[in-house]
Image (cartoon, rainbow, N blue to C red; front, side, top):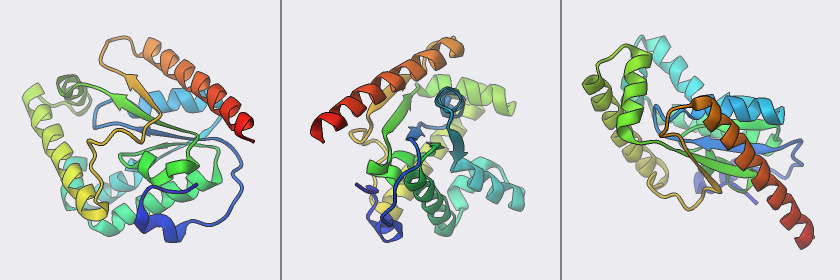
Length: 202
């Protein structure tokens, strides 16, 4: 059991989790926060987003979250990831973040990735941030590329690698309420199978 990120291994410690750990990962505009909130409510878990630390960094410097993603120092990433790991080991949380699944590793009972096409993400970002579609498309492209480069340089992680995830949720179609219900159902079914397999091994 443990994190999938070598750098974070030194921050792990033997502990008994006090609840489930679910990680939610997706690119900007994929709807991961909305889906995570539904999962947390259904499973009676707390919620933490690594992005809150990045947003605080952006507010303090009065810059956009997009700008912050390209200039923030690596110490901010380490703070986010150490916090994610601490909560993953504790349990009782839905954790949101680009690297949440990688950080939590085997501490997570389920690692989820939210699939969403770039054009759909851009439409959502444009509406949310009062941008034109073209402006939003440029911003998420820049954000995606900056994140890929950052996490490769920090941890040698390829963000296109999907094999660590247990479940994939499709959020390309309209009807977020239906998608939230489907996401909760998928996770509950996965957890039932996970628990049965664990009991069989024991």
